[in-house]
Length: 177
Image (cartoon, rainbow, N blue to C red):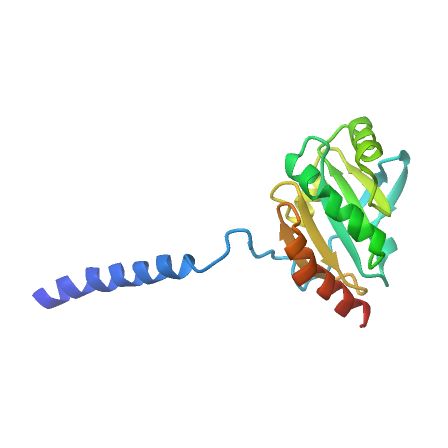
């Protein structure tokens, strides 16, 4: 009986220690998204450059595309923006920019100043569409395949390494579907 009183706490301690040590192996930037391998949320938002015109994610069916969530107020968005401009120049896949919780006027000025990599820019002023996408914060980038299925989510500013080792290879693979 005494051994049992000792073994139960020891087993619990060892189990918790194993889980904690296992967590140290993980990349904290890789937060799994419940959307991966599921249909992308149907999003209908006004265009940033003409708020009277609605855009829907349904218009992208049949195309491999990226959704990049950004805001003119976002420092990380400024960091990744040159990479998005370069990716747009490569014309691998259209990039849809979701200006998140931002004043549309500020978003338009920001794109005019830094360049506009987006095939389409939409305005999510109240942030409700971003909630549907499971956005934690800006910037975040999603890759959606031709069938409208989310295949990848990148949290935080894109890096040259992430583009070259994960994003561009996945885009090229999905284009071949």
